[in-house]
Length: 145
Image (cartoon, rainbow, N blue to C red):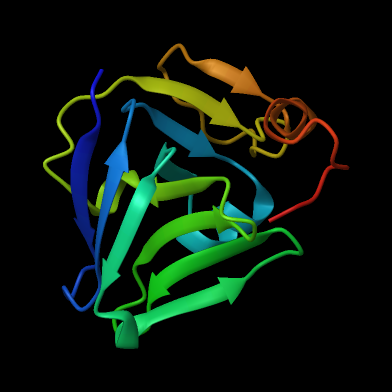
C-alpha cells in the first residue's frame, strides 16, 4: 500500500491534524489510562508519520506517563492522539479521522486490563500489556499510559 494522507479534526473543528499512513488498520487500547481518557477503549490508527497539526492554540498535550503523551482539543475535549515522547510511535484517533474508509479492525492491546463487561465480536490480534511492550519496545520495562 502506498502512503495515504488522512485528515482528522476535533468535535468543534478547532484542531485539525493531517498525517500519512503506510497501512490502515484499526487498533483498540484497553489500558486503564485510555479507558479513563476516552470513557471506553481508545480506537486508533497507528503509525502516523509527517503529522501536521493546525489550530495548535487549542491543542492540549498531557504527559500521561514517562514515555507517553496525549493530544486533545482544549475547547471541546476531543481526544485526538497518543504519541510516545520520543516520537517513534504515533496513534491517531480513528473516530476523529474524516473519510477513513473501511480498514480492518486488526488488534487489541492491553487485553489483560480490559474489564469483563464488554467485548468486541471481531477476531483480532490480542496482546497483553507485556506482549505489546515486547513488540514495540523490547529493551524497555513495561510502562503505563
